[in-house]
Length: 417
Image 1: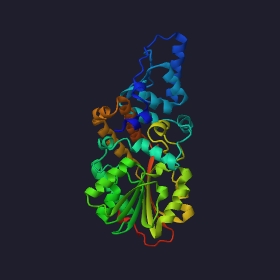
Image 2 (image 1 turned 120 degrees about the horizontal axis):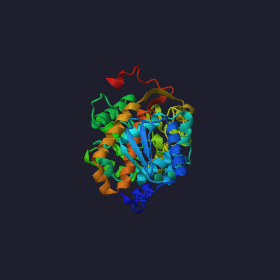
Image 3 (image 1 turned 60 degrees about the vertical axis):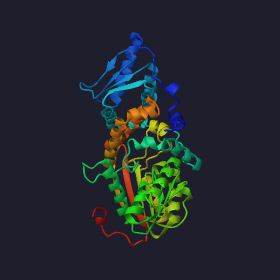
Image 4 (image 1 turned 30 degrees about the horizontal axis):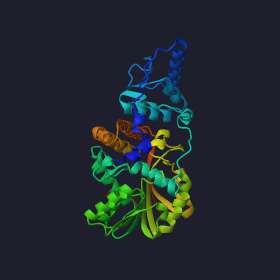
């Protein structure tokens, strides 16, 4: 793992030690006010089944059977929670100024399920996002995807697919579900042998290689993560597919050429709504007269920015769009939407599989970096699972084609045959 990247994202090791502030006896008025403050906050959250324990040992618990306990190390942490709870909780948990005893997933789920819309606007108030310009996108992607292939190998599937899987049946393994997802998107665009495909944002190359190997396509795949491109090129050479798949280390804005199929799985979250019209122009420029395409993206039911802590520390520049916000990609260029599918529960299961595999590898992750990094990624993966189970996030697959293209499926039978 690249320690330089980790330091940039999470801070130095010297600054990551748990707070050692000793619990001090607190005077009556101050202690009573802080207890009432915690009780008020829990009421705003719908009195979730959690216990909050302050630094002086005071416990506030609206439930007889809490699923977990949050222990707050000091008064400053409490006040930061009151000012910007979403960001402050993640940072304090990562630093060790907040400890969670009990089921972390259940705790997050209790909190996410309860806020009313007005409270949600307070919890997830807008912030200045990381910009997705050419230079900004490169920096944003570098801070996440270039953490090191050996890190991601610990908890992804054997194909190294870092997007929502498609579970054909409840008992499917993560490996089976990721292969099913790749086949699912290929069928949605009715991929044929020797068709030219351009993939925008290809990860470690699994889908590009699958399209070439299983469907005989010729693929050009664009990605700005240096680590991922090197991995993908090496794998293409080892599998004898380098003549059918070209991995290009470049931004999607520099796509050139003409293609039968445009494929984007897990990239739109990193584009930003202000660039959707530009993306549409690129697709319009590169698709043939009968071209088809598919966009697979994390999304929302209503406009809202990404979780503040995740946006700052995990996915800088990330934004999950609503279906309505995606319109500038399609409407100005006369693209017809053919199929929209929401795989929210499939992503919930995918994220849970990642979380469980990560937990089995925490000792190795800690050896690569430090305990602070472990805590950050534990919270991120647990929170991702809960965001999908509670409906805070959606997973949209949108298949489309040129408005006048008639060489399209008559029914959906091709997706499931």
